[in-house]
Length: 223
Image (cartoon, rainbow, N blue to C red; front, side, top):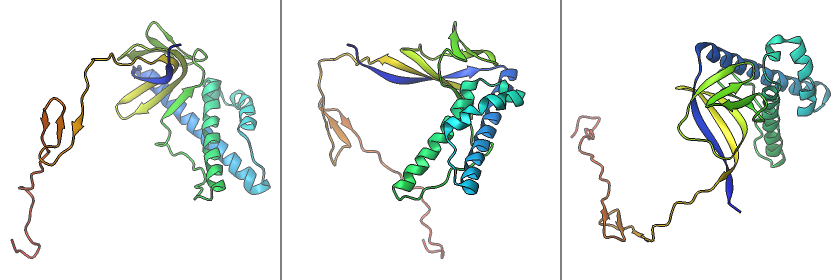
């Protein structure tokens, strides 16, 4: 049986201006949902000592999407992932409390603290079509591929970075491909005269730092 691993392929997107605006809108609404869900949990505990669960909040998504068209325009799996992120944050908080560590209660997310959204099931809201990325309610997006995908796609994440938008596709069952054997061996000897000496008698010189340009003038004016 061939060994395999889970691997994430990150590629740059080439969205149109309209698609970029759609991405920004999704990020904004996901962040607002996160903060609202956090406020709900916090208020329920402070007022009634009631713990609100992730699944209780997920059950409310149907009503939210019915009452707010802007959330109906976002795939349900993306919204579910937001609540899953919040729940993961709370689980980490509870673990720190249990371990006696400084807990650090979950914080609200500012506009510069939310950079991605995730389709948690490939093929349900996000898929590939002839090299293009197809996203539900957003459309067909060009991808600047650097390598082919391997394995079985599982999740799709859209992320905003300093130089643009990226897609990260997590794939399972990616086969491991060991490098071919060369039949040669080598060793490295770290020494004082040279940084390293290879088995082939090749010397790697030490890196020398030039302090010649350092200003050694005393603050009082003495050289």
